[in-house]
Length: 169
Image (cartoon, rainbow, N blue to C red):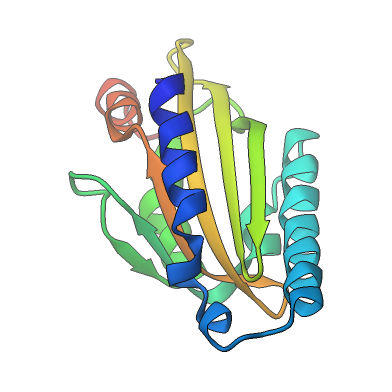
């Protein structure tokens, strides 16, 4: 799985320009570097807070009208419009089945203008006492300090295993 994620990061990093409307408009290098640095700091600080036990990652990072797309196949893989919709329909079905919050371990954080790519592993314990581990790639398109769009890659089967195994409280 590590090799597959590394390959994904290389492909994603090489294709960031297609997602950045400012890249085609010839924005200055200093401006691009400044946006990259600022956006990376926002996401990095949010992950540091989450790792330390903070519970507000989505509230702190996502715009209220975010478009969060989970790529892959299955009922979870689709676009969620709005932070509250995403939390209710995608995040909460898993988190209510966990004994505590997912603890992220960031492996890579890349920024290019308005885009920030986070590659991380998440670990928690389900209510049945069994571990939950997953690896994630989240691509944030930032605007005014908030993520307006996110594309998420994860092992949906590991997510679904918890949903099948542990009844919702």
